[in-house]
Length: 162
Image (cartoon, rainbow, N blue to C red):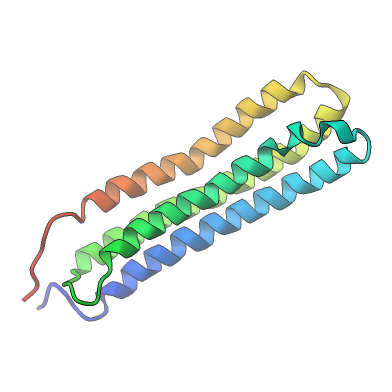
């Protein structure tokens, strides 16, 4: 039995795709949900729009996490090198951990951003609480990035397939 079957890179590419797709979907949902709140708030107090862009910026960072993980995983995928099945499963796990936590972080940022931006119209003291809650939501994606980096570091061992 070979350690490097020809289908092993499929799992690595699935990790790349899941990191990018899921984290981007989370960032898109967070941006759209918070953007709806900003648009609703902007009709009443347009001077608060710039301070209310914090949720949109924070949700876009989630997509950057997925991009970083997908670039790291794809750098290990080369047609001229051996690619063990173990690496494929580790890269799939890294992509899923980053992607799914990015999806949940984007979802949380969108909901919190929408509600807090709408509350910010009525009470300006909500801003500090909004930023703190958004940081806690962002940390979900950061945890997934850290797990993905730890998993990706497990593939630095050179394995020869025979």
